[in-house]
Length: 632
Image 1 (tube, rainbow, N blue to C red):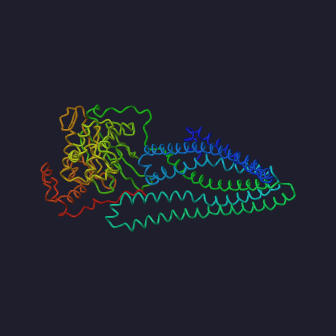
Image 2 (cartoon, rainbow, N blue to C red):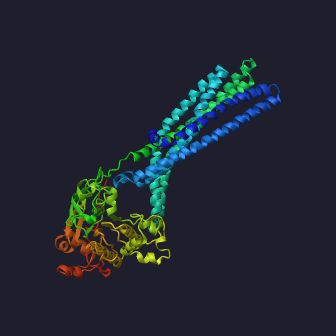
Image 3 (cartoon, rainbow, N blue to C red):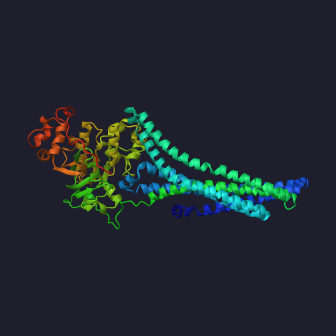
């Protein structure tokens, strides 16, 4: 908690000082109130003086008004500080999470990060508010009441000295057993958040498979586990109030018993005994409130630890120090490869074997690299190394003659357009989604990207056009429309390298072929603006296509065949059909064997993809589905 205080409390220093000062003034009036009540009883009620009673009543009313005024100021200071600090922590967390690489996000997990940025920050926020409003009030009120009571009569004060350690002992016993539960409680909330996210985001799949009852049972078990921990904490905490009030009432009985004898002996007045009872009540109630505050602060401390874990997590992928500005892709030497991999390898933390091992490939500007292989063969991991979503653990990945680790991240991501496997859109409009790469892009650039992505037709068909609304995750569009919009988004801003990570899987053959034709036309641009949809001065578009379809990669200049993280074939379609058994198996699992002609270019024409050539003549390849890379 102190680490968060040093980092975020400074801007609210004035609120953190004025709030407790106002509360201190309020406490002074609370401590004086029993003395005024004692005077009212002794001088007013005891002597039947109405004017004296009214006078002291007016004094009490004045005390109350002044106390309320300072309490309101304290409340405002507490609200400003707690809400401001909570907002700053949330903003810092969100910004820091966005700097983390995939490796760090994988380590924490999305549900846990959501819980930390919401529930944990709320706990810290509550602790700050209560610290200003109550942490000063109750300890000072207890100390002030005890001191005032001892000044009235030291013999009755001995009752304080006996009862207070008893309350403190009960408090220590309960807290020592509650604290270990709080961290476990937050972990249970993480699990609950995970199941909630899975259930709500996958509700269509759950219903399609009639798994509602199964998911309800999973959620119920997680909720029961969280409730069990919360109940265990509640049972322990519930002992505080009954035991404390038992000690309090016994102490009041002792004060009245002993005070009665002192009043009979003329050593104390009735008003002083009443003041003593009031001070006793204030003192022990203050201890009860302090005990409840400690519960809140203990939870906040556990939450602060979780927040600091994220803030202290240094991103493994950062900008290189003093990195010179990278040359524009269109200005590099003609013989400089657009993409070069030399022994590129990557192993997930804790994995038993590499997800990608020793990949060597060279791709010139304007060329296309196709990557194909079974599920879990490392295709997506391999293309994630190009924009530095992950860093290679061995070897190098170079872009336009420069190691990607030497590129400033902003420039690297500006040069590369990425279309992930899962089409992801955010709520807003089509225009706002397309402008992610280039916020200043004009409508002409947006329509040009939509034309290339084969998305212009359905956008024009919408009466609102580019201003058509997009619901969260693009749920108001079909899967194919979402994929085409994400492809268009990657094309806005004219990237030099386009990565399509199995991002045309929802497209029909005709649309997929039209998309690849448009990309090839863009790749042929050499600065003359001779291709449809291209602008003068554009650099040739280098494309990396990850796909399960032979038809999507067969016309690529270079095809990389992967199996269990290793490259088992590298070359053109014709070369791989002659030399790579894995590629042949994949091909014949998707097309009839008789469609492959025996020679060169004839083979390409004879085996042109068509929906009618679906798999029915050849057995499924054992290479199409492979073991998913073990990260455990």
